[in-house]
Length: 345
Image (cartoon, rainbow, N blue to C red; front, side, top):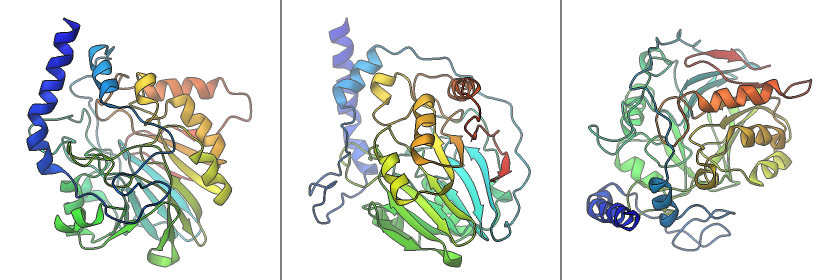
């Protein structure tokens, strides 16, 4: 029976392969580097392979998620914050709004009902976004950490293009795909490279531990990345995107030693033997907070889409328990409500 199940899973992947190629992003064709071998981008540490995926599917201990969580949107954020101020709003999944020095920045925005190449199948959200799209302030910059459907959502990006015309930052290899899909102001960044943004803000791409791919032919063909945003008066913040735990957090701290804010993922982490290479657990997120030396951290990547084996509230529950067990002074690591905004000290 186990052999039959493995063969069935493999056959299903083969069957969808042809259609999945239609959604693939063209592979990056730039020069070889320490993280690009001429064909694929590479992590400092290995990530799971296909056999690991099959093993996970056959051994799943999947927490039951509700079909729907009753929720109401939060209040509209301010249109801007004064110079020197920083404010963060948790919207849903990896979507946050950071407002600093008059600049409004969205991370991995998704307002779609599903994170999928099609609208009728794929992971479906269990709660509405914490902020209505219509209540967003003017958006100047969008940070895209990688091209998975729950982080690079084309319907949402097209809406942002139509209404806000933001600068969109992506890792190498994703720019042409977004421009072909209607986005007009796209810049690609390699790790440790930077670019200017509105109002004297500077944005750096920095390493993280994940992978890329929207079909079966483009895995590792475009770069995944985290970001550090430096503003002249409001200080700097870090957005991790999706990432496993590793030495990249300490490497970021060495170059950016005074982070005012870090936005760190905590969910889709079980089973840890499989997910740990690409998704930090709550305890690892707490260690990443320490490694980064961030004054404040905010949790994200939980409670919206059922993507792994942890439950809908499991990741924030575990993190809050860990924080309660810490000695004084406790780390300032916030778990904001969906749609909740808070001024960063």
